[in-house]
Length: 133
Image (cartoon, rainbow, N blue to C red):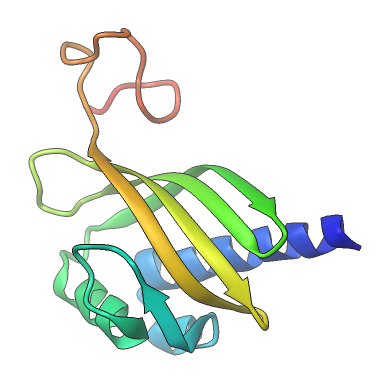
């Protein structure tokens, strides 16, 4: 039963991220994010309204891509890339999400600028198998 719940939670979070960050479908996003959503990110105002307001303010070209998602019970960790933010570099982000009653209830993140091949000391890309153009 636990495994099925974790798989359902992964699907839920990926659908939620796509609805909000890629499709900008705020009505759909309201069905995924709790009205009591707790935001721990330093650059996002509190609550669901703070998150939605931030997304409304970023360039329409912003896109989220996911490369990895892991679940343990009601906690999920995603490794992804935000591009099109109008910043000098894409963001590589680890998002940590807690699910409660089938909704995204709490969020933490760790953000890092994506580097080029010339900047990478390891010689490996930070996301996927290719460096950003």
